[in-house]
Image 1: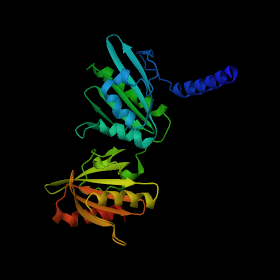
Image 2: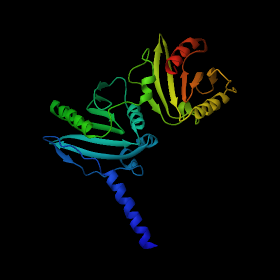
Image 3: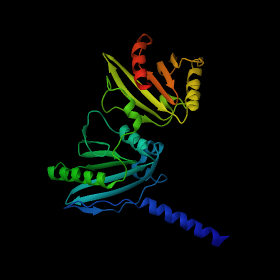
Image 4: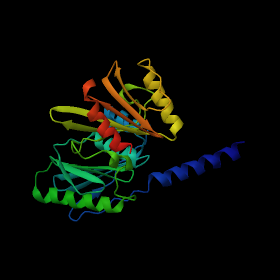
Length: 280
């Protein structure tokens, strides 16, 4: 039994080590590259980012590779987070951005602010930062970020469902992804959210895609049940009050669901316009 068990364990460890060590850090001219950090995994991510780890773990965190680039007293720190897929990578990236940042064409999207350069590409979320204010160091960080983006596998694309959000009234760079419990409900999962403004009214639109029409119908039925409603035979658009989120406009078609919150009951025309654009 012992001879059979140990080779199996070794095989698993070798396979896992190969997967975890497949990141190669690029060189940066004039800087010394330091790769003394371990590869962080779900079980020890807390050792590196402490309380923030929970958000990463909830969005399919796989592993983290860290390096430092030093030139005299100047240091650029590079962190490469691998997540389960492109949607998860977007989700963690979007949770840490602000519309006030300066956005750049890097990977799928990136931004710079106060010595920070962050971007996502494929299933990777990349963070670079320096406390130096020297223009040459900031330029070196910019060059290094571009090299990392070119090195990482995967396409520089955004999750497909983001393209369904209408442009009219959409507030730029405020889209987010909620993997579990959209609007606080356990039966609503994997939702993209965008913020909108129509005149003085600010509201949110959620788009959820499930694996099948049956699954979407089940989630919609569960949501309607909270308001003591049942889905009809033909019409799939409803207005009701969510005890936690106020007025809700709910609609679905096949495996797609649209939820709009933040509008008043007499603003059904606005809700219908956006719902029709998404579910057409």
